[in-house]
Image (cartoon, rainbow, N blue to C red):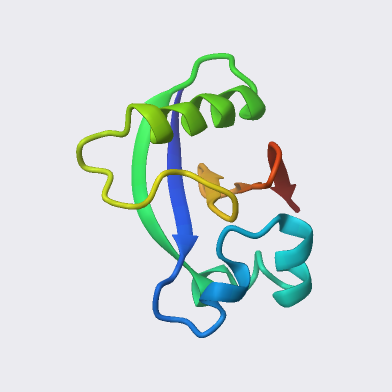
Length: 107
């Protein structure tokens, strides 16, 4: 089954950029309490693709993506390497925040 994947990074044109870029989830959600709802005010979609992940868990997929977008980035990926504060959305519904250590599901 194919999964739609979207990668979001902090927008360059916002005043809060230096406050939230590369910061951990607990800090960012204090600065932006409704981050999930207000995502597009602070983040922009930098990449989208579809892939068949078969029977892997979200956590396994996220770890594989982290490696892929840091060591073997696709040639059409123009954003910075995947890092803390990036957000990944699966199938327009499951949202994950790249935290300082691992991933935080955004409920």
